[in-house]
Length: 115
Image (cartoon, rainbow, N blue to C red; front, side, top):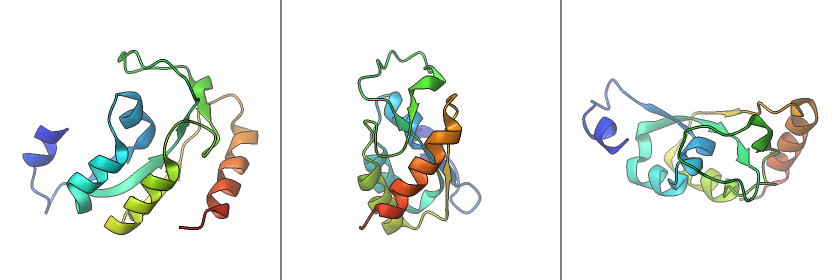
């Protein structure tokens, strides 16, 4: 990630962060937001079930997608930093078999936040 960001022209190249996969791969979404600031323009919001093994395969069951705020990802910290740097658009992403129930929970969680 560092190589790609450092070797592309910000005039032409911006990035979209998927906080789930950054976290799953061992990264820290807040630190990456701070490090590359306005290079980030879009964000996928998705939470990871607490205690999910991170085996660096690049994959995990879609059933590990949980409503925002119920998993192990620092949603509030990420949203605070993303607001500071001016993320333009957010996408709630949930690929679980419970998406019909979980998306409304995620929306309610986001609406309840005060930051």
